Image 1 (cartoon, rainbow, N blue to C red):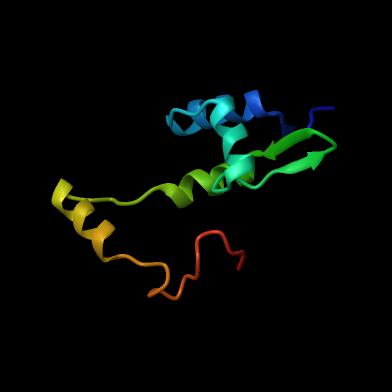
Image 2: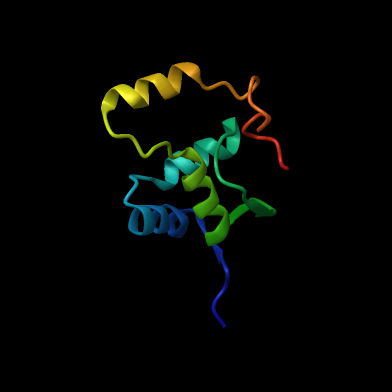
Length: 93
């Protein structure tokens, strides 16, 4: 039986292979401590991730599509979680 939970190295590999986004297991370890990472589950000291949580995390960090680089700059300057109805990025809906 294959587990639906991935360890940290498997999760980093999954993000890199599925999304083409550079991701290391050390970075995921840091995000567990400082926040901002994908949802994870703990069993004692072991941290586990699910593929659907990794997909949601990567997709949530993406912006675009943009026709030019100037559009991306305008998006970053004008967007505010506090002004939008989306709430803060770490809150669950």
